[in-house]
Image (cartoon, rainbow, N blue to C red; front, side):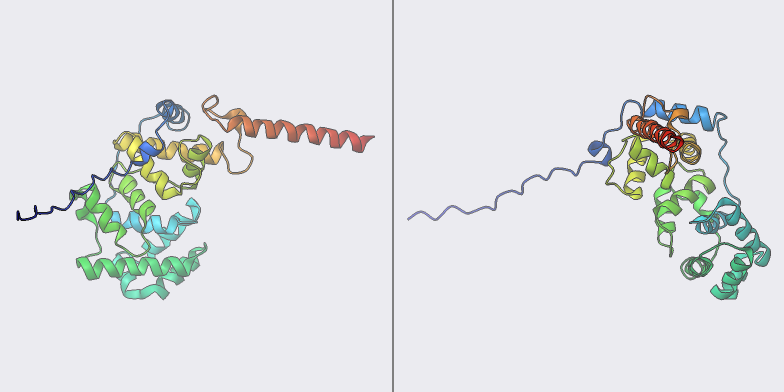
Length: 269
């Protein structure tokens, strides 16, 4: 009787690679024109890359900027530098001392931010033996990001800000203005959060510092001045004709104005 043929396990089925975000939401052909118009309106002079003398300063400044105005951020940072000429002094003073300095300078969330700053300094001291981040200039982008995001309270956006503004690397931080603009322009799905939108921009924008710095700064200015959360100024928008949401807001403005006129007329009668 012949021996049974040896059985072989079926080969594993090939798995399809997960589609990239750019494949899930392909960038429109108008994206380069959107970038060009924003740059022409808000940042017409090409920026020059500059690297911070000490990236740790930039990291702490970025932590302070969270939910703060630029004026308060600068005031708090200047107060910290006056109180602690070197960050080792802040580490030695502890979170309560840092909090007292921030409170005296004004601004909210002093307790939360003082603890984040202290924990960042403590982690740098314990893991690297130094509070300086100057050596990140010699690291590649992925290494710098991994280092920064390993620190307490430092997420993707904070790391991207340090990369873009302090190390002149082609990162693309997404704040609430850029997130809102990307939704109104229908560049990205409305269900995506800011982290996912940042990853999408990282895939579709030119991987140069100048292109990303210009788009980031110009888009934020556009969000503050024109594409506001409430009552966007679509009639003055440089992206007129490229924005699918413009008609909705303009119609709302027309209807509101007409309603106001009717109300005033009825009161007059």
